[in-house]
Amino acid sequence: DNHQISAAWVGMSRMVMAALLGNATLTTVLNIFSLFAEFAILLSTVDSFKQRAYFNIVLCMLVSALGWFIELSTWKEVSAKVDVQASEHSQALLSRLLSGLCDAVVSLNQSFRIINHAPKLAALLLRNP
Image (cartoon, rainbow, N blue to C red; front, side, top):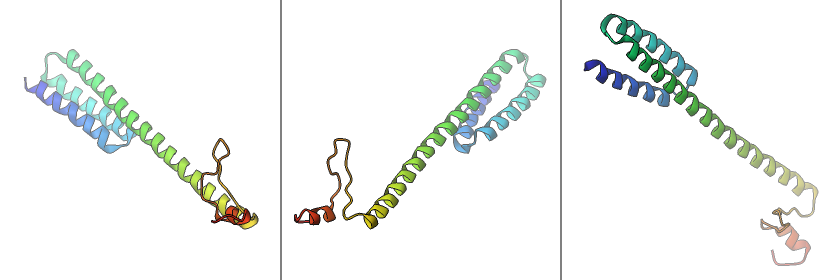
């Protein structure tokens, strides 16, 4: 049946659109418009309108959910990267500030062991830097 083949292509193209656009709101709106357009076509051509309509509604919901999932996961990833960059920037600023105020600055881990080379501390302790 030609309609089944075209429905498969429409479904795949909708999923590709959701993945490529990266904008869940736009994907949802375009899928709803596409859904209404397909309903108009199905009303005039297909005898089994009810079955095809359910398929198209489920497809629209799945593609919209896929678009929202992609967008939310992208936002979480970007947010985490921004947080890491802000933390690294704050740590660098704090380290520069402390270096200007203190004789030696060291970075410690959770067990209070020095994790970075501290030449100023080595010089204060009269050790080779």
